[in-house]
Each structure stands twice: as C-alpha cells, then as structure tokens.
Amino acid sequence: MKFSAKTSTSNEWKAVISAITTLVEEATFEATVEGISFRGMDPSHVALIDISWPNSAFEKYDCDSDIKFGVRIDEFSKLIKRA
Image 1 (cartoon, rainbow, N blue to C red):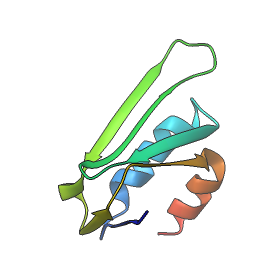
Image 2 (image 1 turned 90 degrees about the horizontal axis):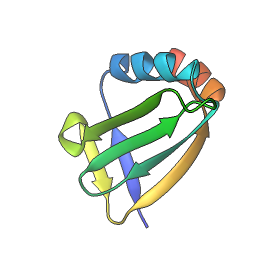
Image 3 (image 1 turned 90 degrees about the vertical axis):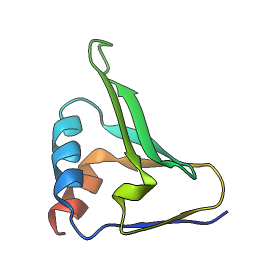
Image 4 (image 1 turned 60 degrees about the vertical axis):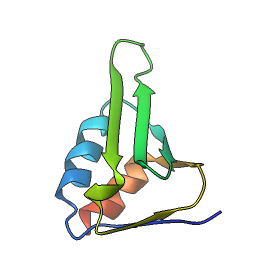
C-alpha cells in the first residue's frame, strides 16, 4: 500500500480545515486512485460535509490502492497553518 500527495499551495487545505474545525473533531479521509475525499457530519447531525479533490489537483499524486486515514482536526489545523 503506497500513498503520497504533494501540492505547491496550501490555501485550499487551510480554507477547508478552517471550515470543518467548527463542525468535527476528527476526520477520516479516503485516498483512491482518483483522488482524496472526506465526508463527515457534525455531532448534532445537522451539517453534512462532502469534499473531494481529484488527483489532478495535486502537483504529485500516487495511490496504488484505496486507503483511509484519520486525523484530529485541531492537530491538522496547527500543522497546516505552518505551511
């Protein structure tokens, strides 16, 4: 199982993470050959978030099989702000 994605600009990721920080604490992203996606719902089940980035949105993208990875949004937000 191999996955890597590289983008030269972090602005989209910063905007997305900023928006979902208020809705969810943890997120499970799914990477496939086609790209990366995330679907989540806030704890009160009022707001649904459905986001996807095609592999063409990345400078480099390599994913040889479907993989799911979870992140704590507050920690990811701290990391992405440094980019």
